Structures are given as structure tokens and as C-alpha cells.
Length: 190
Ligand SMILES: Cc1cc2nc3c(=O)[nH]c(=O)nc-3n(C[C@H](O)[C@H](O)[C@H](O)COP(=O)(O)O)c2cc1C
Image (cartoon, rainbow, N blue to C red; front, side, top):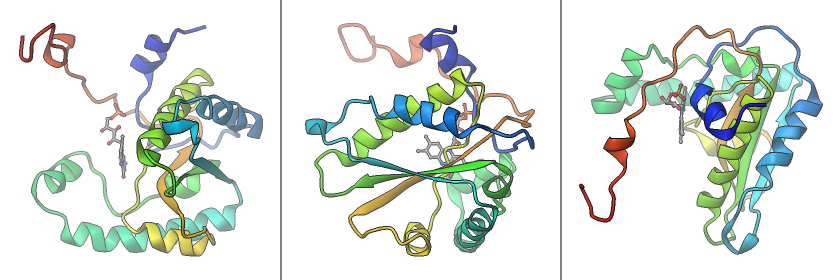
């Protein structure tokens, strides 16, 4: 069994998935892990919507790509350059090719809802890695359109759509800064 650091080091974002089936039990195992995350006032403001139905995935893709087309037309600056360099376009094929989509929502009525939900997303990502599964932390630009499509109540915010499957992505993990670059001991910048 890999330890947390080994899982964290191995994990990478995957945007291409193989056709291999994923078991619902494995997805639930990862959510069991995610729901153990700490949260402000223990509000546990997360909800996970699991979708595997082909037609629903196709609809989600369609709505996301409508938003992405507009988003990419306006893209410029640092983000525009980065996206181009990485070959990321408005097309989101992974929303259909991944066997499961896990949509993560936060309940806006609680304090610290964003921080709390993103902690649980971190736990979820590491649990996926433990199961040999992969995802991309996809953050669509048109959150409200997707909420409308899926009849999500007003007080919930869509944080991310996680396509989950087995990797068919040759892409390497993005490099990380060294420990020296990110850690200061006792004093800032030392
Ligand atoms: C908050 C957040 C938002 C992200 N949004 C997207 C996204 O919309 N589309 C995408 O393809 N990747 C997205 N990513 C994935 C990052 O691009 C990726 O984690 C980063 O480039 C490092 O690559 P690695 O995960 O392979 O190490 C997002 C990641 C985070 C944490």
C-alpha cells in the first residue's frame, strides 16, 4: 500500500480516459474518504452527484462546451497562453469518455464552505489515486447553466466536475516547485 506522499507524488491530471469500466463501489470508496475531510464548524458542506448515464453525460458536455466556446473566445493574457501551450481547447471530450462524472457541490449557507469542500476534493483525488483511478479537476465557466440543467437548488455552488476513469493520457505530471522554494523556516524568505 502506497503512503500518502507516494500517492500525492504519483497523481497527475488526466484528460483522456480508456474504455475500461469503473465500479461504482470504487467511486463510493473515494467519496467515503472525501467526506472524512475537516470542515468549518464541521458543517460538511459537500454533496457529490454521480452520473454515469450516457445521455446525461452528453448533455452536460454540450452545456459545458457552449460555455467553453465563449470563454475561449475571450481568453487572453497569462491564462490564454498557458491553455494554448497545454493544448487545452473548448472541447471537453472527457465529459463523455470518462465512465463516471462526479459533480461536487458546496452548500453556500455555511461559513468556510469553499475551503471545506476543496479539502474534501483533495481527499477524493488521493483516494482515486489509491484505487488506480484518475481525474481532471475540471472547473466549467458556466456554473449556473449546469445547475439549471440538473435542477440543483439555489443554495448549492458547483465547484468542479470530476470525470473519473482509468487513464489513457500519456501526458506527464506538471513539474512542482522544490521544498526550498516553498518553505521558509522561522522567518519569511529564509
Ligand atoms: C482549482 C483548480 C481548477 C482547475 N481547473 C481545470 C480546468 O478547468 N480544466 C482542466 O483541464 N484542468 C483544470 N485543473 C487542473 C490543473 O490544470 C492541474 O492540476 C495543474 O496543471 C497541475 O497538473 P497536474 O495535476 O497534472 O500535476 C484545475 C485544477 C485546480 C486545482
